[in-house]
Length: 476
Image (cartoon, rainbow, N blue to C red; front, side):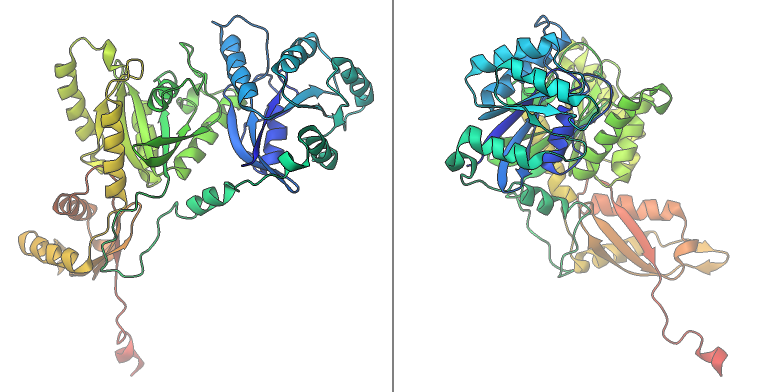
């Protein structure tokens, strides 16, 4: 097994920049604003020949536990307990601050091995801050520039010295390979045999993104699902900024949950940081397979909720709706009937979408939610044989043939499934451009009903088959 490193320090010393440098990707949001990071994020990292997990943490601030900075500090303290090694990060450019000395004492009391990282060492005047860092009593400061990648060989040597060679080079698994392999099947893969109906594979990790407006209860829902206070929550709207991934096991199924920042209307987004947060959330949606749309049951189906749902459907992800805060509803039966009617009317493009009432606070409905997720994932991965599809098409054409356009009858020859994730079908016909969209929708809805494919996007592409004899008469 590899070891785990927690990067800690006061706000704005460059912890997330160092985290991104070690994992080799721009995963954590970085901005000049202090306190961008709020949750702790864990990812596989590499420092030359050293492989380990690295934890990005919120800036350490001295604050009451009930406040947002206080709850952020609790998350950092959990990271310290989980870690085998601590990168105590200071800003060499600005020098030591009172908080640096306070939290150096916290780190000393933890008893964990520490590497003192003096970041921003490329800046003019950083030498003075470097010398000051000796005062913390945490050993020799290692000058680095996380932004420019300077000082990484010295950081590697300091890690080996702090842990010892045996611990530093212990066996570890490169988790990136799993993630890369998973990302390669994002868009959906064609199956070699078009007539094969592949069986559902429940051994692969399932990637789920949780999205919604600010304060809908996304982080609280994930904490309730995994049974621990893994993500920072509270009454304040917009606490989550980064898209944080959490590994989890549900009834033996491996799951990767992505928490995302709340998405507001574009007109209300003014800060650069919120723009970055929303972009990070969109990346999480594209990486996910299932997207749980968390709606506040007390104010559901606002315009922004529908825009989020439409985005997910256009991306080809499989949506599931969670009506959260159900414990606050006084007339549940009446409201449930109303919500079901609204869901069918407002989201016709995913007719039959799974919609579950839950309460993240009380834990109600969580198993039902996950059962709906698995059911939707199976539909999203489903494949229908060409034989069955064309028997279905014969019945459709006999019952409701395509209309004549400009006096000429449209001819539909056959249909086949080209891909899964989401299900995509190709219809061979005489004049694709002239086929009315209303008839394409009719085919899609009939196919959804005939082969039991509720609640997922269905792609229907019309193609004409080339006539090999076209144009011969003209040549003569």
